[in-house]
Every structure is written in C-alpha cells, then in structure tokens.
Length: 346
Image (cartoon, rainbow, N blue to C red; front, side, top):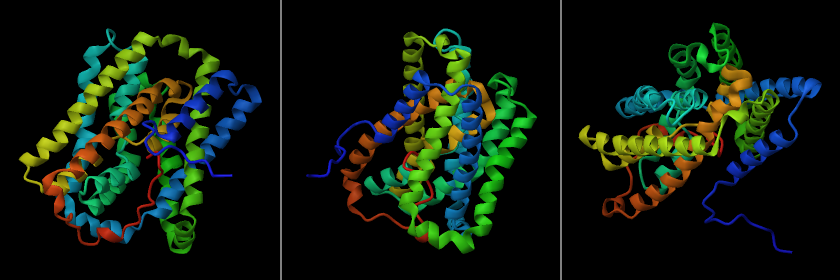
C-alpha cells in the first residue's frame, strides 16, 4: 500500500484543520466538572513545558552574536510591539458596528503577541531573503514577548480581558518566563537531546497547543459565550483582519525601503514583522483570559491562517523578482542558530 501524503498545494495548513477539529470537539464534548479541572491542570503543565522547550532550544551565545544586526531586529520589534498595537487601538472605532466588545478585545490582544519563528524563516527562505536575520528576529521577538506582551495587555486591556489583573501578570511570568529560563539553564545538558529529537518534540509542541485550545473553548462552551458571535460579526472580523495584515505588509516593505535596508533584509523584516505567533499567543491567552480565552484567541486563529496563505503567495512572487538572482547576504554568527526554535504553527 502506498503511504498517504498530504497534498502539497492544499491552501489550508493541516495544523489549522487540527485546531478547528479541536474546537469542534470542545463544542460537542466540552470538559465539565472534574474533567474540566483535570484538563485545566494538564493545560497549565503543557504551557510550562512548551516554554521550557523554547528556552532549551535557543542558544544564548549565538543569539547574542545575532544582535550585531541590531538595526534590523529593532525594526522588527518596533513593528511587532509598537506599530501593531497602535493599529489595534485605532480599530477601537470599529466597535460596536463591525466588532463586539469581546471580539475587539481579542483583536487587540492579537496585536500584542510576539512574531512567529518557523513560518518567518520558511517564507524568508522561499523569497531568498536574509534567513539568519529572520531566525534571530523571530527568536528575539518570542523572548521579548514573554515579558512585553503581558505588560502591554495590562496597560491596554485592563480588566476588559475577562478577569485580567496584576495576579495574571505574575502568573504568566511564573508560568512562561520561569520555565523558559529553566530551559536556558539546562540547555547545556539537554540541548543535544532536544536537537536529536526535535521532530518528536515538535509534535509535543503542537499537542500542547491543541490541549490549550480544547480547555479554553470547553470553558467558553460551558459558559455559553459562543452565542454572542454571529456570522455577520465573524465576517466583519475577517474584513478587519485582512485590512490589518495588508497595512502591515505594506509598511514593512515600503517603510524598510525608506529606511534603506537591502532587499534581503527587507524580506526578513516583512515576514517577521507582519505576522503573529499562534504558538505563543494561545498559551498567553489561556493564562490572561481564563474562561474568556475562546473568544480572545478566535481573532488570532483566523489571522494566523490568513497570514500563512497571503505570505505564501508573496514569498513565491519575491522569489521570481530579478533581484533574487543574487544569493542572500548572511549575518555574522546568525547562520549557526538552530531553526528548530519554534513549532510549525509558530
């Protein structure tokens, strides 16, 4: 028998289908009572383990060497944690015509999460951009986001995030940053093991995220918050997110040209500075929003699939540019950074 393979041209990421299937499972069989307590505890442990793996994968020495390209990384961080949130705040005027308060809160949270790692690297490589710079930019953004995202959420979301408080800020630091630092400390002894088994651990990454999604949406189903979302509201959300993505793709491409970055660097900045990480955003939402996490992560899940589809098209077009004939420039020290610092869903 021939082994079945997933069609390479399928426009939807298979992992997104798994996420949607998990949402459907939570809708049909939500965890209740003791099962909900068990799922919540397992989700908390999965989140901590997920960020422990992030810490164990990232080489501190090589990441510090990548800081030599500080101007590029500063631009990506500014797009991720300054420009995106400003656009999110500007979208407040769309409430309540296009978006309900809960959907707007989720949209604003979307603008606060870190950039992706794996997909930024993949698209930069396809477009023949500065791959080492994309690796560093995504890694730095994820690391910074562990601290910056909850701080921005505390400042911009306040109590509108369904119970967000200072206690939530402390909890996310303990649950995300502490395991990350533990992974960094133990990397010396377990780094080789993680490198050898990165494919298997990648499944652990994605499984952890699916568990977080199931727990969040189960809580939402039990509390009946999904009755608040109509097809018209979802269509409005998709339209707003399409505009948001278009604006960021335009700014990161033409803005970097005005800043006189080279073509390879502009590609890395566009793909790292215009996207948001599902892998980082889902665990953070689970900590910050609790029972309201299902609506909070809905905009992020939709945006994630949209950015994959649009950026795949852009990357292929960039690869056909006449300028792409010249091999991309490599940044000092960054070429040795392991690509396996994020999940496929990143």
